Structure formats: C-alpha cells, structure tokens
Length: 75
Image (cartoon, rainbow, N blue to C red; front, side, top):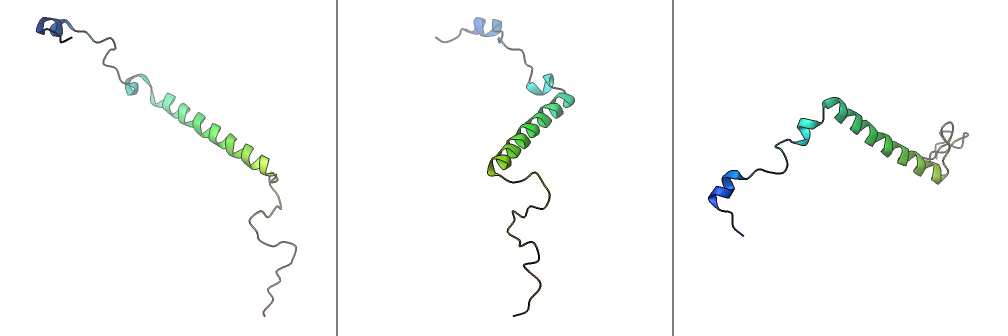
C-alpha cells in the first residue's frame, strides 16, 4: 500500500540513525578482536594437541633428521 505525502512527512523510523561505530568504542573493539584471536589460538592449540605433537622441546615434526644422521657426507 503506497504511502501518502502527509504520511511520509510524519514517518519516523523505528531505529535511530545510530551506527555500530557510534556505539562501540575503540577499546571495546580492541577487546573484541583480542577475544577472537584468543578463540582462534585455542582452536589451533587443540588441533595440534589432537595430532599428538609435543608441547615443545626437541621434536622434529618438520622432517629434518636428528641425532647425527646427517653428518655432512659427500657422495
């Protein structure tokens, strides 16, 4: 149903002209971003833990030999 010109002049939007940037302060935005990265980091840690890798130390999960198996031999 079309709006009459008189009704259009009286029209008031239900929501005010406020954007999300007006409501959220830079500090709040920084906290939100930090929380997102914390969640992503925790997901990554859980994924690595489920793979069976150690927390740190002498593990060589990158495929490089350890314990002197590569002594610089020249063929």
